[in-house]
Structures are given as structure tokens and as C-alpha cells.
Amino acid sequence: MDPRAVLHPVGPHEPRVYWTRRAVLLAAIVVVLVLLFAWGCSGGSGQPIANRPSTTPSASHTPSPTPTASIAVTACAAGQLSVAASTDAATYPAGVLPHLTATLRASGTTGCQVAASALRWEIVSGSDTVYTTAGCPATSHTSYTVRPNHPVRIGRIWDRHRSVVGCASPGTSAGSGTYQLRVTVGGVRSPIAVFHLTG
Image (cartoon, rainbow, N blue to C red; front, side):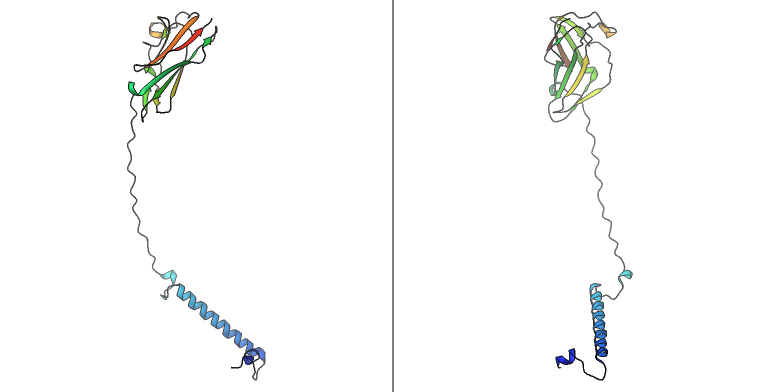
């Protein structure tokens, strides 16, 4: 076939007629190719996608987690507890009340509980017990959970008066001098903390 006949059609009709025929033929070929491509992508089953039976995925059973029992925190044993006593100052002039602090620490890997009523505060001067909470009724039902590496600090303010039996009312005022604070919890006694009253 002469290539010039393709580019310059010869015949009884005008060249526009031949070009239109070629455009229609080319469009038909493109449509056929598109249809073939769509048929091949659909799987070639000949059944419309919308009418194909859908596959319902089976529900997978996820086992529910087994509830773990909460670990009860037990009372601190003497062997797993340490106690430290401190004051907010070394010397207190007249009219200034000492702020006392007990610091509780637990050893081991688990925490334990200390009831507030289990703490016994004691201030002595020489052999004279000036102030003690021993024998006083519990004023709080609070319990402190002491965990390893998480010390618990418990504060108390001393009104600079002697304690009386039953703690019903404060006794006489404590005079100037050197005093020692110690705190005992469940038989565990803290080292002493020394402070002074100057007025």
C-alpha cells in the first residue's frame, strides 16, 4: 500500500469524507479496547460486580482479658520500714511553734500501709518526757501507703506545751532548753532530732 494514499486519499469523494471515516473507525477501535480492558479487570466472569454475591467475613473471636485480682496492700512489717524524724528549724525563739516531720520509707519491692494512729511522737529533754502522743485517742483513721523509693512525710505542729494523760488538754508551757524528737511506728524508732527553744 502506498503511504501517500494514507496521507492523501484519492477517490471520488472529497478528502474530508475519507478523514471522517478514519476518525470514526479509530474511535470505534478505542471503544472496543476500553471495553476489553474493563472486562479483563472485572475478572471476566461476565457477571456485574454489583450483583456478585458478597463474601461476609467471619467474625474473629478475641478472647477477653482475664481480670487480675487487685493486690491487697498489707500493714508494714518492722523489717521493711524505716523512720526518720526532723524539725523545720534548729532553734525556735519565743512564740514560734516547731514543725515536726516523720519520714517513712519502705524497703523491698512492694508497698505497705501505716495507720496514722500507729505513729507515736515523743519529745524529751534529758530524761524528762515533755510531750508524747502515747495513750492519746486516735484523731485520724487515715492510712499511708509507703512504696519503695516513694517516702511518705507526715507533719505535726507542737504547741510547746507538755502533754497530759489522755491528751484532753495541753499542760504547762515548756521552758527554754534543748529537746530531742523521736518518732516510733510499729516498734521501729527513728534516730533523734535535736532542737532548741530559746524563749
